[in-house]
Amino acid sequence: MLSDCSLEQLTTNHLELKLKKGDAIIKEGTYSTNVVFLRTGLAKIHLAGPYTEQIVKVVNAPSYLGLPTTFGSKINQYSITAITEAEVCYIDLEVFQNILDENKEFTREIIQEFCKNELESFRRCANRTQKLIRGNMADALLEFSDNIFKSNTFQLPISQSEFANLVDTSRESVSRVLGEFDKDGIIKIIGKEITILNKQSLILISQNG
Image 1 (cartoon, rainbow, N blue to C red):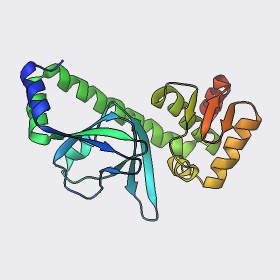
Image 2 (image 1 turned 180 degrees about the horizontal axis):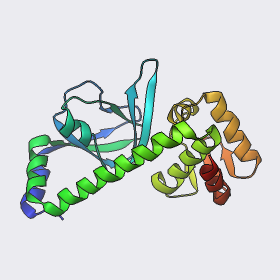
Image 3 (image 1 turned 180 degrees about the vertical axis):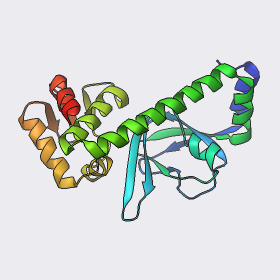
């Protein structure tokens, strides 16, 4: 919990914006002067590669965005873009630092989130390089179901090309594997809506890579 003084600082020193799908939240290569808090909606974290952009992960609200860049280098090392309608708060960096100094419990929560995200990054990197496409796509579908939407039925918030980028494969491979999962009765696809029918099978595919 934040102290009353910290809540007042936060209330009077932030800018709140409503964004449309495709609007930039953070741009790679720009100077970072704010901490960004995603209040509602979904966003993708992505960075420029030598040939194309790389989608690192999809994040959902509520979530602080860009903290490693803000505190680590001052220059944004990646971009964050809304993939649904979203509400974000831009918090003055100095104010946020003061809040961290004055609220030990809040600071502990931020550190725990840092640690959790770093461990997830290690796991995701290992999976991408060691698993086959079916395993990586099962991982992504389980992530959407369990952590992003918390439902077995959801609207896929990214295009098949973006999905392919997320799991390091081609759009054609994504289409093929989704079709196989649908044919095997593991998922049901209607337009962009996906329903997981047999989660245990999806978990086994994920575990076996």
